[in-house]
Image (cartoon, each protein chain N blue to C red):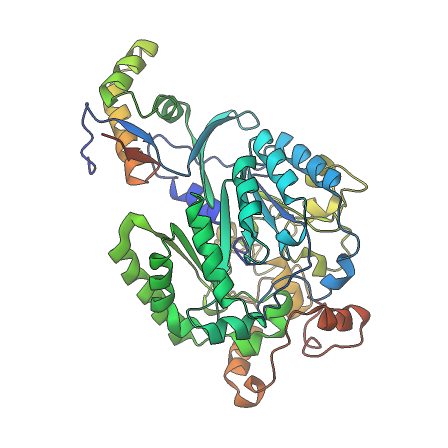
Length: 94
Length: 410
C-alpha cells in the first residue's frame, strides 16, 4: 500500500470534487474539473461513507455489517482508500 | 473559445486511466452523452488567431437561443445522462443570463464549468455564480509576456487576466488555466508553468493548437517546430515531477506531429454533445464543415432525437462507414479513423483516413503543411485575426484568403 492507510485515518472528499448518484447510469460518480470517474458498486459504497468524520475502521465495520457475505472485504476497502488517496479524490483530515 | 475538449477529451482520459484499477468501472456508455458543451454565443471581445470557432461565425451572432431555450436544452440533456456542462463561446460572459443558466445547471446536478477569457467577469457576477452553484471557471491565459498576450488575442487583456485569476482564487474556485500553445509562446512553457504555479493553479491545460476554423487559416503562422514541441513536453514532464499532485498538468499533444490520429471526441456521438449559439446540435466542434449533413437544431427537435435518431449523429458512429485503409486496420478501434472534419478539410473526402495517420494515402498533406510552416515566404503572411469584419468576409464569400486549399470553409 503506497499511501499507508491506517484504521484511525479520517478522510473527506477532496476540495472541488463532488460525489453523486447518477440515475441515468445507475452508478456513483466523482466529478471534478475536467473529468469524472464512474465507480463500481463496491467503490461507491466506500466513498459514500467518507464524510470527514468516520474513520477507516468505522467504514470497514459498517461495510462488514452491510455485506456479511463478502469475503476479504477489508483488504478491498483499504485498497479502495489507497487508490482514492493516490488519485487525490480524497484528502486526509486528521 | 479555447480548445479544451478538442480531440482526446480529458474526461475520457480520466475514465480510461481507471480501466486497470481495481474497484473502478470503465464501462463508459455508448448510448448517453456525458458531456454537454453549450457554445452560448459566438460573440467575443478577443480576436484570437488560434480560435477553432467557425470562420463564418458572424452568421450565428444574430440568432442566439433564448434563456428559456438553453434551460430546456440543459434539462433534456441531463435526462439523457449528461453530467459535465461546459458553458463556452465565444465569450459566454457577453450574455447576461449566464447566472440563470448556472442556477439551473446546479439544480439539475450538472458539474458546471464556465470557459472564459475573463473579459466581463466582475465581483458581482462571480459572486452570483458562486451562489448559483457554478463548480469551476476555466480561464484562458496566453503568455507570460504582455506583448504576446496582446498580439495573439489582438486585444489589450494581459493585466485583466491576472486580476481575474486572483478573483477566481479569492472566491474559492479551483484555478483551472487553459493555455493554447503555438509558435509565439511555445518557447515560454517553463515560465508559463511558473506563472500558473504562482497564481495557485490547480489544473493547467497546455493545449497545442489544433487546426480548425481560424487556426487552420493561420496554420503556417502558428505551427511550431517538432523540436519545440518535444522540448515543451520535456519541460512539462520535469515540472510535473517538481509540483506533484498539487498542480495537475495536461499536455495535449498536437496530432500533426504524430503517426496516428487522435480518437476524435472519443468517437462520433459517443460521449459529447455540443449545442451551438444558434441551436445546432453537433457531435464535435467543427462538424458543420462536413458535406451533405443536416444537423438537428433544438428549435425543431429535442436533444433526444438529435442524439439517438438524427442521421447526422448516426453517420459516423462505430466503424461501418469506414473504407480502406481504416476498415481492415488492426488499430482501427484505437482511433476510429481519427477526425472526420480534418479528413474532409484536408483531403475533400470525409470518409477517408485522417491524413495525420502515416498509413493514410493523404499523409503527404500533413508533411506539406509542416513544410509550409517552415517556409519563410509563407510565414511572412500576416495573421488573419478572428474579427467580425473578417468573418463577414468569409461568410459572404468576399474573401477566400488562405482557404482555397481546404475543402470547406472551416
